[in-house]
Image (cartoon, rainbow, N blue to C red; front, side, top):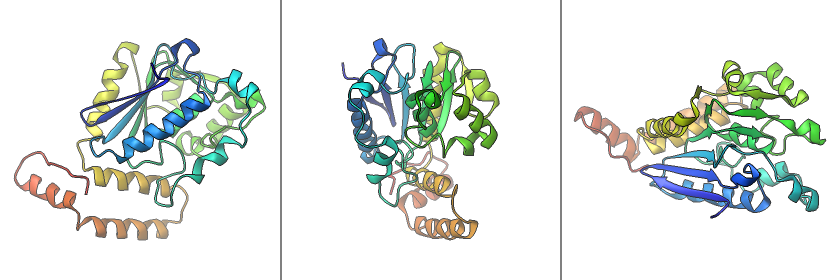
Length: 263
């Protein structure tokens, strides 16, 4: 079995880390597979949302430290991110780089790089057994994708992010919900059903609109309001000419479900 699995159910792609015997510790080979799968999903018009989860009892225990100690990366992982992404991507990380909603179904501990991957997702659902820890400070490192020092404070606030990053504390699912990191906490047995239902809900809208909304959301985090307004105005003006806009109006007037093309 591959260490990273990808299947498609309807319009939802399911990406699963598949090293349960190692708590889904991420190897360099897995990183390459995750990148490749994510890009292929982005290019596949059938896939309108992606769910990311882990096999077994963990989401991911983070980087495989045995491999890392024997084969240090030639450059910091944060440097390798961003170089391969164009100017039109929402943000320079694996999951934010695609214009499709990405949902984390966190089925157990997500530590280190595992926590970073949950952070890179647009929406997060946690099982009751989920745990989160940015433990890099205890390894003499900073968060290795740079998402922890850029996205985390924008989601939970500067003070909470500072606490988690400086202490490396592991927090449970309920605390993650209380600080606004996850949407909801559900029984372990219900996690995948809830995640797939959420994925189905986000695929009902126009794929073209979802992609532009995601791009504007991430770009809007760091630019002046007037620049953001100009981009948003140009985007909606362009979308008025799209097939999805015309179909959305027709479907509303004809009281039927729209048949989106994503164009």
